[in-house]
Image (cartoon, rainbow, N blue to C red; front, side, top):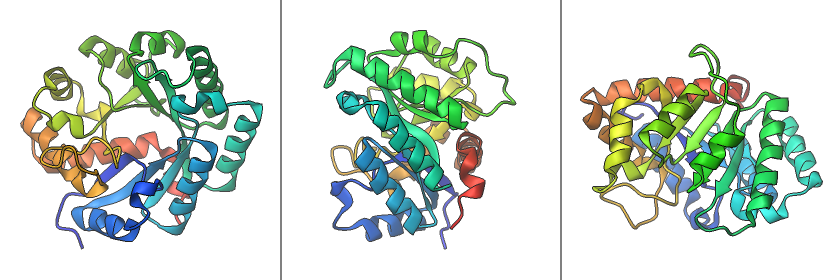
Length: 269
C-alpha cells in the first residue's frame, strides 16, 4: 500500500516499445508511488488498440484513442469508423486523443492536421467524450478552431491541453472555454518561468497532472526515460509554487481528472 498522496497520471504512453521489456515493473513502481490511475494515450489506430489492450488487462489503466497530428496523413473516413468502434468496444476508452496541431515539426501537412483534428473533435462531441489536445506552436490557430463560448465551471471539461506551453492569456482563454491544462515534468525545469507562473496563478481546479512517459522526465531525471512513478515530483513542484500542501494538489487534480474522464465510473474491470 502506498504512503504517498493518490495521483492520476492523465497522459502516458506505456503501450509504446520503450516499455516492452519492463512494463510490469514500471506499473508496479507507479502504484507503489501513489499513482492510482494512468491514462494511456493513443497516437494511431494501431497504437490506440495497444493502449486499449493494456487498459483492459489492468484495473489501474484507462485509454484514449486518436490520431496524433504527426500521423495526420494516415487519417481518412475509415479512421473515424475505427475510432468509433474502439470507443463502443470498451468503457475503458475515456477520451479521444491525442489529437491536435504540431506546427513545430510539421511531420504532416498543416491542412491534413487541421482536417484530422476537426473530424476527431466532432467525433468526440458526437460520443460525449473529452479530447486530449496536442498543440505545439499553434495555440492561436487552435483557439480559432475551438468553440468560443464560455463553459460554466459546473459543466464537465471539454478536454485537456496536453503539455501546455502557451502564454498566460492563452491559458486563461482555454480555461474559459472549458479546457484543463496538463502539467508535467517541464514545470520542474529551471527555465520554464512563464509556465511556472501560470501553474502558480490559475485555479487549481483547472490543472491535471501528467508524465507523457516516456518523454519529458522531471528533474532530477531529465533526459532519461520518464515513467508514472515520477509524477509525484510534478505534484510536489506545483505544491511548492502555490505554497500549499502536496495533499491538496493530489486531491484537487485527481478530482479534476475524474471530471475530465467522466466515463471512468463505468470502466471498472
